[in-house]
Image: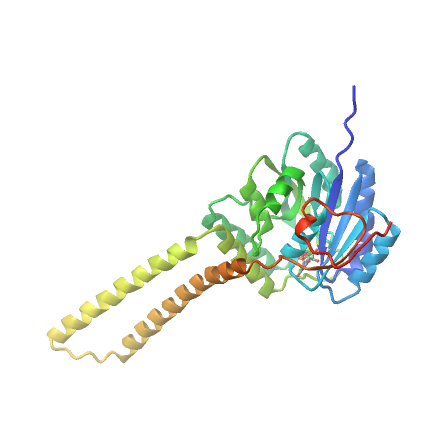
Length: 330
Ligand code: UDP
Ligand code: MG
């Protein structure tokens, strides 16, 4: 009987100001990979950090030949930094992790097992989240409920980007050229056999969240606009409802005028002007969100810019990646 060699694994982690925690991240990830006995590479993407992340990464790459480090030209955001890492990796299986150790690398053996059993994607689903603020939990829960209402594809609740996926799924993901990426949704859209793995989400090992409210809102709008055109339909229904209200008010005014009662209502006029103006602006804003994204897509700019890669991996989706410099650390 021939023993099938273990599939090559790529671990990809985007990092933004994660200098403090990277050493521990590296040691936990490499020890679990060694324990499972898979040949692997660890791709760390520096997303324009302002601390020593890049220096720490270079040192890790010099010490461990399995580490590949990628320096982006500036901060591109979590989803694009992740895309940069994915475009360079060569694994037959790809594990996406957050660099802050909130996603336990120790789940790897179980994820690998489920993939051996035929899954295309094994995604981590949070049973419990520790060390998060009430605000974060409440907004995250609201977000997943709204997105599952609006979207035509079913995006599992309480998941992040933490997942193991097959090369086939990655190839399909990389064939999607959208600029505003909501990667967990895009992977759901791809379909295939996707199975959850429940886990308790740990608090951040060090540092604080790199997702301030401003980034969370942008991420949520990207998710909604990327996966649903229902807000546009809601906009037109809203327009219809407000027009009906305006028409009724108009009838009321005519009847009042015929009946001879003078209309003293300054307040009601101001209220309806305000209401109608507000609804109009909101509808324009919704259309603007979609239009702006179409504009970004039309420009067809590269998704990210890479300044430097240290290490050996240049995966199958790197053909469109313009590398300013490629250094072989080995
Ligand atoms: N991240 C990134 N670029 C950014 C923001 C975040 O690469 O602009 C990375 C960050 O380093 C981490 C992951 O994305 O590895 C998730 O971010 P974070 O842990 O801050 O989000 P949270 O877990 O609080 O939702
Ligand atoms: Mg985190």
